[in-house]
Image (cartoon, rainbow, N blue to C red):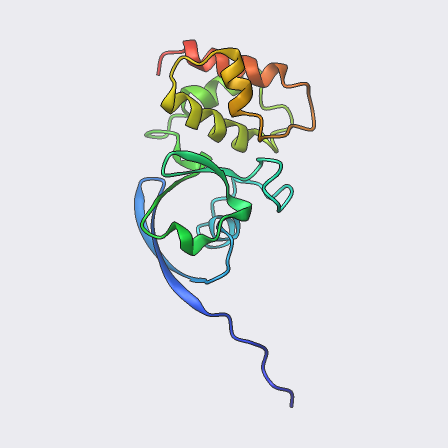
Length: 163
């Protein structure tokens, strides 16, 4: 017989996820992206680079766009986490989600949840951003399909849309 491997220490994580409080036991070093996908079963945030460089995993933490692939889950205790799944209201997609659909900003769709969450954070703090401000807000999000034209057009369309 061999000795058992090291036991992962777990902690109780209580956070507000998409508007609802929940508690789960999570490993102390677990990343937020893994918690969201494997424990909460919210798969909209994508793991693209595992280093906080591509933005595919962007979520809102207390309203601020952050990469969930470099965020330790237990550090979110008591805080509000919003994912792409949480910005729809009463089963209706948000104006930003609708604009991405209508203006073809989704492309292949892999980066789209992160793009939308970064844009959502911008629009919450500045409902009428300039194109430069949109570009700056999305600068941490990479799209491998396009030159970003349709993505910028989608955010601009959402600015002019009625909620």
